[in-house]
Image (cartoon, rainbow, N blue to C red; front, top):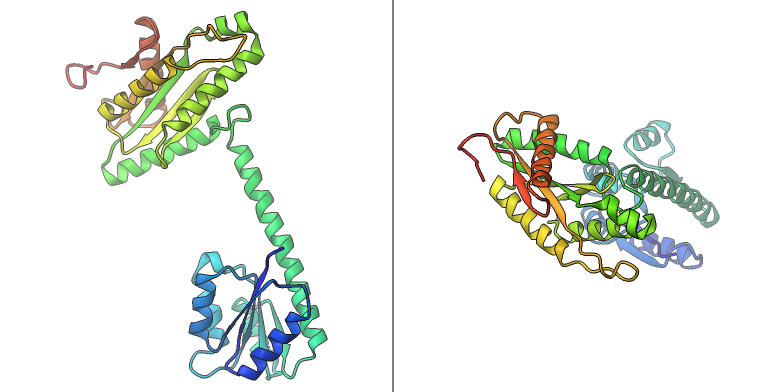
Length: 312
């Protein structure tokens, strides 16, 4: 496993001593050294570091200052820091631990004790990293539709609420497209549910390919999908929906569905527009627009009329 360590000490002799001790172990594949706080902080910014060994007492900026610099950057706060000090007083150690130090080693130190303390901190970091990765994975799973890999309905509603609030604060627009596969029940009845699932996944991939980096695509339920388009006006959203509709009509499928000609219907709604004031209003209008597209013959994009203004 690739791991790196940073040693910060104003004494070149001490830095070299620590690096030589660590070189005899298999704990780190890369070593960095710095003679002061600012130099050390630059190393941390420029290179991934798994552990820092930092002298407490240095001219200019001391180890406490280095801890405060780390704490100011959220992405650096979890790096374990072992402080080196020639002072034995408890007050100094407590202050360092309260400011984020993981452990203390008193000078002159025993090489065996230093390595043992480093191993403890690396084990703690490994457990913390595994827990963080597991939590992140659980969060992703709780927000993802298992069949398509798109966001699920829960994530969609949270995103819509967040984007409406952002639009309200910034005075900008945001749009929503609701899409539905036409005659999907017939696809299932003709080719079976396994092919139906493949059709759903293919449409999901199509929607994903039309997203900007800050858009969101979600499976709303069954064969229905929703796209959230922050910053898009009604006209822009209708144009996007039309591109998707056209692309869907060109999809082809392997046997036994090689003769399938897929179409989708899409409804578009925008905030702020008409009486849309909430997420529920936005979803209701997009659903009404989709219902309108279905009623007008399917394979089309529709918008709910709100009078002469905004009529399509």
